Amino acid sequence: MGTAILRGTFESFESESKEAEGNEKPRNIGATRKLDVKIKNAVNVSPARETFGGLYALSNLDQTFPHVIEIVFAFEGEGRGRCIAAVETMRESLAEVLVEFYPFAGRLVVGSDGRMAVRGTGEGVPFVEAVSASDIRVLGDISAVDPTTLRKLVKHNDGAPTILEVPLLTVQVTTFKCGGIVVGIVMNHVLVDGKALTDFITCWTDLAGAKPLSVLPFLDRSLLCPRRPPRVDLPHHEYAPRDQRSERAVSPQTKPIVYRSFCFNPHSVIQLKKSSTIATQNGSSTVPTTFEVISALVWILRIKALGIGPHETTKLLTAVDGRPKFDPPLPSGYFGNGIAWSCAECSGGELTRKPFSFAVRTVHEALQSVTENYIRSAIDHVELNRVGVDCEGNTCCISKWSRLPFYKMDFGFGRPFQVAPATVPNNVILVASQSRESDNLVVSLGLPRDAMDVFSKLIQHELTLKSKF
Image 1: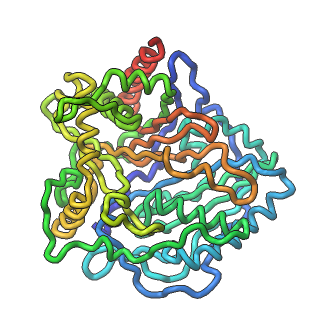
Image 2 (image 1 turned 30 degrees about the vertical axis):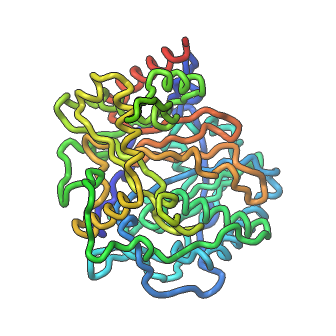
Image 3 (image 1 turned 120 degrees about the horizontal axis):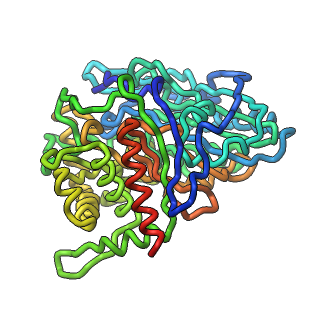
């Protein structure tokens, strides 16, 4: 597990960006964006003061999802003249915040037990200063995922042979001629999840604004240690069988991936909910959440687009924040992966032939099953089997960014007007807010071209149909 190959190196990927919202035309096509970015300076930012230099242990939940997440934050800024000072402030405050969040400054290693851990080397966070002669408006709507363009705004790690060679955090700050600023962050998911990352960025912006830290990181991951002895109380189909790789898995190295994004407006979501009321055990009914109906629809259409057979098993894994599931909840500021993965599972035939409400109920019940006992059992399952999240073949993962406080981040030049993924890991679906001022949600994913063409037609049809009611 600790030496799992880093999947999704993106080198052969093709990118396209499309939106589907009723009968609207796509907001922005990635191929029309012409962005020139030049690296001005690149340094490693180390903690401002000496920090822990030993081995920092990671939990079992940290070991299971060896992926990289790339995010861009787009700010209007306050004029070109203030950009230099703003970048300097960001660099200096990063050094200060790393004193508290020191694991980011270390490097991943594999211990004698085969588990990943962080060695407190203090090497620091790669920090890149870049400039663009373009106006930031050339980016258009960055919620339409476009790796070809947006990955120019992050310091990515293409070519890293394993997840061990990927820094735990990298930062690129790109300033535009208009004074706009894009902050590109690459997060090694082995160390943290989205909640922990936003805690870190919040504290970073606090120091940039000369304010006290909003929350101190809780660094002790022993709270999520396996039980003694480990006890697996429940089935955990969210994890792949040991050493088994699906022959159907899409390899970006052999079959290029096309990326597209699809926009759900509130009206479309309301119509989806009307057609998918969930019957409860006591005979009453409940209205599904926005995330549940979007997840169910995307799951169905993805299976259709890939041509999954009616007797084949398909799974949808959802990242669930486990922090509030514990009694008492995990401490505020818990630094690490606090997520567990729910597993909705059925055959391709059940998913595509039964009413839409069946898929919604399947997703809903999987999410409801994530309790403290479920998470403890999952931790023990990983301890005994040393397995990772099954995110290949007929399985896909979905993650919700729309509730993360990305749009509250302010380094001193205003809040971002858009936050979006620079790319999407293989077999992962991201659901994010379209912009700071919008109630729309954007679903981004990658598929082989032939499958993406089918998926696009199917989802365009669904969203157009819902817009008429």
